[in-house]
Length: 87
Image 1 (tube, one colour):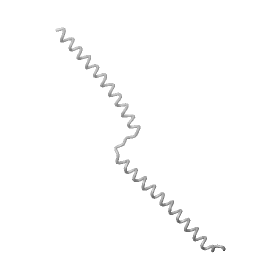
Image 2 (spheres, rainbow, N blue to C red; image 1 turned 180 degrees about the horizontal axis):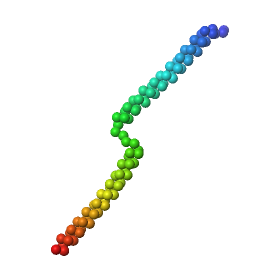
Image 3 (cartoon, rainbow, N blue to C red; image 1 turned 90 degrees about the horizontal axis):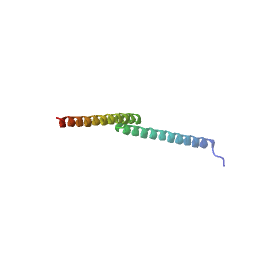
Image 4 (spheres, rainbow, N blue to C red; image 1 turned 60 degrees about the horizontal axis):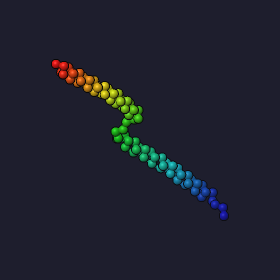
């Protein structure tokens, strides 16, 4: 038995509408989830890797300077002690 052409076209149109609707729904869900994730991440106090690396370099420099200053203070304390002992 041959199907009526009208029914075939109707089935095809409905099928295309469902596929199109599902595709649209998928995109809407992806956009919604993406928006939620972006909003959540933006509320976090995060830094970029570049900023972190920069801060690590600065911290290393500061540590080195503090170490030098500590050594200088220790040397000055020794010198003061030597001068006091020579009186």
